[in-house]
Structure formats: C-alpha cells, structure tokens
Amino acid sequence: MAKHVALLRGINVGGHRRVSMPDLRDVLAAAGYEDVVTLLQSGNVVLRAKGSAKALGPALEALIDKELGVDPLVVVRTHAELGAVIDANPFPDAAGHPKLFQVSFLSAKPKAAVVKELEGADWAPDRVAFRGREIYADYPDGMQKSKLGRALTDKRLGVTATARNWNTVLKLHELSAS
Image (tube, rainbow, N blue to C red; front, top):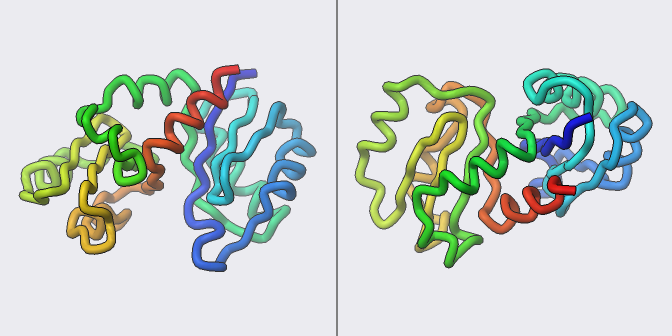
C-alpha cells in the first residue's frame, strides 16, 4: 500500500460543511485505509491505500458523502508527487512568507490557453506559475484584495482546484514520508 495525501476541498470553512477529523479518520480506517492521519481542520489526510492516486479521489468522495453526509471534492497526490511539487517551486524566496505562498492542487492540467492567459497577466505584486497539475501563487501583500486570488477559480481554470499554504505543503510531505 502506497502513502497518499488526500486534499478535501471546501470542508470546515466558515462553519459550513462540518467534518470532524476524528470521525473522518474513523470512517477511513473502517473502510480499510491504513495509517490515517489528519492535519489541521481543513481536510488534509495522509493515508495508505491500494491503487492509484487518480482512483482514490473519487473513492474517498463517495465514502465521505455516504458516511459523513458531506460531498467534498478530493484531490490526491502521492508522497513522491508532493516532493516533486516542493522541488519545482518557481518562487524559492516566497518560502520566506509561507502563509502567503500557496500551491493549488488541480484535478487535471488546465488548458494551455488558460495557463497562457493567467501567466501572461500582470498581477503585481502577486506572482503565479503553473507547473502541470499545480499552480504556485505568491501573495506578498496577502490575499484579501488580490486580483490573482479571485482569478484562480474552478470555473476559469476548467478543473477542480484546492489550495494549501506552503507550511501545510511541507508538513504534509513530512507526514507522508514515514
């Protein structure tokens, strides 16, 4: 069984779509997943599972909906894929403000025209870079008023996206290592 990182989108945000992390761990363990660990309250799960990361996302979505009554979108990466995301960081200086530096994990690669449009726009002082199924977004002045942050929507991208700050990315990689 391989280690995977499952990123649930849209749970426990603003008091909506509440999922207890102990309940989530129990449901996943009862379904046969091993070494289930959660990080924070925002739907970060590290677990051992058979099969591919691609198949795991829909399986987790169905299980969580059935057992917990919440239908999150789930994006999955392996430990090795998460390591490659860290290694591919196009903005190493952004690691100096890790809460303002995010990686959006996508369900698939967006269309080339979308990537070209978003990477070609002037978002200053924010910066954006696409790398396959990830988007790196640096918000040095915060996200509150960021035009870039408002532009990175599923509708515009044409794929499901869920973002994590750099601290969380690093911690998930560390948790999935053992």
